[in-house]
Image 1: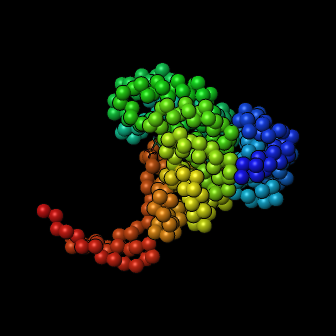
Image 2: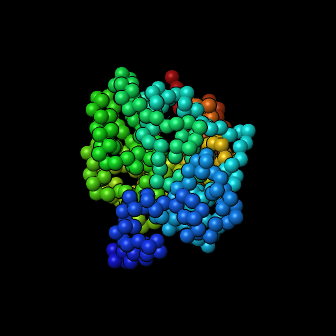
Length: 377
Ligand SMILES: *Cc1c(COP(=O)(O)O)cnc(C)c1O
């Protein structure tokens, strides 16, 4: 098995003029990420639309794709669902009336630069503005990659001061950008300082690195993360083909380090907007020891109309999963309400009617059952 994997990787590396050792080095992957028309043309036949988009979008939001993720794309398929997430289309340059640069209204809940406190007991900390690969539907394109209208800034001392004073905060979510792009020492120091605040019970990291740059998941990183338990990780994966052998190995290393893993995916037109793809995705995630956590409606970010589905499609996908597969496989479908309302769950309606003595329920097959309601004293 190992030998077979090694020869596959050696072949992959050779296509890039690299040795196996170079291919497996995260720094090499980052240095060789595709950013320009010339870079992409070495590996994909760009369509005229992609070619034109690539020449223009960089002013607004950087383009960057790791060789690892590019190697998962079928170069013969112009509509490959992985390609669609990372290679820009001209629609990205459009701006529609419903679109916003900060769709989740994070700026208004910022308590110190980089610290967003919206919910009663937990905060979001934006640790960096860099990712291994930039997703074209990024909800934080206003700051991620450093090209947008807002400069990313983290006032670390200010954030620590706020957190020490706000004893109601028991959960800190590190996101960005991608926190796993920070050097081990830096991340270790940040996690350690957060851990030393007595009322903070629980840390989590939101990252797409196991998918985009699995080479970054090293034994040293895992050993460091393990020391900060309880630490949970939410990955971001949208399509079952993102979970190849390399991502699976990286996720296995994290799981073996005692880190519970969840997945947040975005429902995207032409990527994963069918029950079949979603079913294959959640099953593959469970095989990789990752519990599906959220399925997000695509935020109305500027330049993402071509990705957005109708909210009913997400509800229909949940209906197609619930009851038909393992409960562990079913994410919560949510809309992050524009204007800072936060995450709102959307569910199929299983309550058909209600009166004082009973409720009528619809099961997953559409059959109706009656539940007797005990009178409440
Ligand atoms: C998503 C989010 C969180 C975490 O929410 P959970 O539902 O607990 O995963 C916290 N703060 C902000 C601002 C968020 O957007």
